[in-house]
Image 1 (cartoon, rainbow over the protein chains, first blue to last red):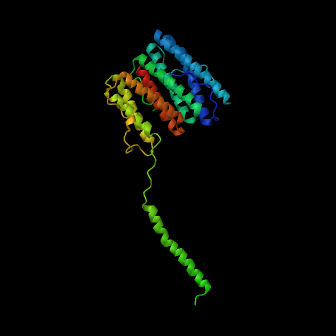
Image 2 (cartoon, one colour):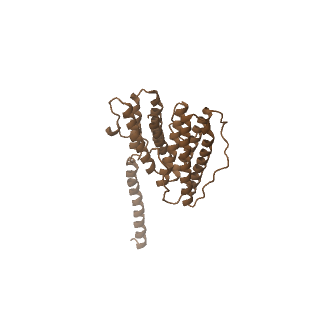
Length: 156
Length: 150
């Protein structure tokens, strides 16, 4: 729904805000890794969706890395590899992983909201919304119902 | 004949006892005076609009909208849980947020959801920290509803 916002210039970030932003960045790294694995198992329409999602996550990652660097907070680097939550064997498991990834990213950006304000909160809300929207599109592609949840990204 | 010292003591006692008699009377005024009602919660209008949005879906029988209607009701309940004073017994739904009596169409439902999404985004961005998460959840849920209603 939105493109990554430019680097915000507001009040210094609290320790809690920095911790949550780093967690959100780590989730973006993991999402990029996952899309690199699952894309090949999808059909043409799925591949197109996966490519767009990976581009969006890369763009968000780059933005948040720059934002954290400007805030004098060290951005967390990507891991060399990530353990997938279940084996990737076919198109169905690939779509399931895409839903899982986007829900995880949404949960991490959701957690940022209360720790920040101003342009930081706008950026977090945009990222949260984009991930939840992609999860909805993946659920539609997989024929899962309901396609939405009342409180996206809420765990438990 | 009273000495000046005794006069002073009597005046002191009169002042202290007199104050003690008057003070409960004044306190009684405070005791029985009703406190003014607290002002309505800042989320009152948003809450009423959320109820009205849920009502928009009541006449839409498409299967895909049932979870959306239920989500709006869940949002209203979650808002009510954090509002002070609680919304029960607040002013009735103002005409500006009452659902139209006209039958809903897919286009009118989508338009209502679009307006509600923008309102939720604006409300989240202006909210105090302790309310930002719930309002963000509502904004994002509404964005997802728009995706479903495409």
